[in-house]
Image (tube, rainbow, N blue to C red; front, side):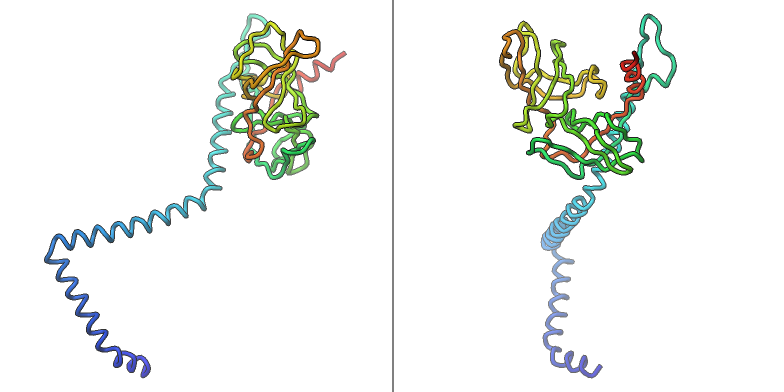
Length: 273
C-alpha cells in the first residue's frame, strides 16, 4: 500500500493534468455538436472495424460447421428430389407402391485421402458399413460423377474414381442421346474418353455428357463432363470422344454415396440363367 501511495505522490502532477484534460475534452464534446459528431463517427468507425474483424474470424472458425450443414442440406434436397420420381409400369399400368417411388437415396461423406496424379488412383471416404455403404455403389460430387465404391470396412470405404483405368461407366450425350463406354487413358486427371460413337452422330465441342442408367450404378442425368474433341477410331466408323470432366479431383472434399434400392434386384435378374 505504501508503494502505491508513493507512486501516486510522484505522479500527482501528471494525474492532475490527465484529469483536467478529460474534463476539458468532455466539456467540448457536450457543448460543441460538430466535435461531438466527429468523435462519435470516429469511435463508431473504429468499433465497426473491430467488430468486423471479430465477425470475419468467427466466420472462418465456423466454416467447417457451415460446410457440414450445407452437405446435410444437399443430401436432404437430393433425397426429396428422388422421392418425386415415380416409376412407371413395365407396360400400361403405374406402380402405386410408395416404396418404388424412392429408388435412389444418398449418404454424405468426406474424402479423407486419395490420389489424382497416379495411374491407379483411389479415394478413401469416411463412411462405411455402419452407414449402410456397400461395394458397387456410385459416388458423386457437387459437380457430377466421381467413381464407384469397391471395398468397405466398418467405418470407411474405398472408391475407384473415373480417373482409374480399372473403371468403365456408360456415358450419354444429353442432346443427341448416343451413348458409349467412358474410361480413362491414364494421362490427364481432367480428361476421359467415350468410345464407339457412330461416325454419323452429330457431336460438337461443348456438348454435355451425363450418366446413363445402363451402368446400373448411377441414376441417369448426373453430369460427367463436356466434349473437348473427337477423333476417328481405327476402323474409321466410330468416334473416340475426348471429355473434359466436370469433377475437379484436385479439390474434391465432399461427396454423396448413392444407394439404389432396386440395384440388387436388377443384378439378380441379369445373373439368372
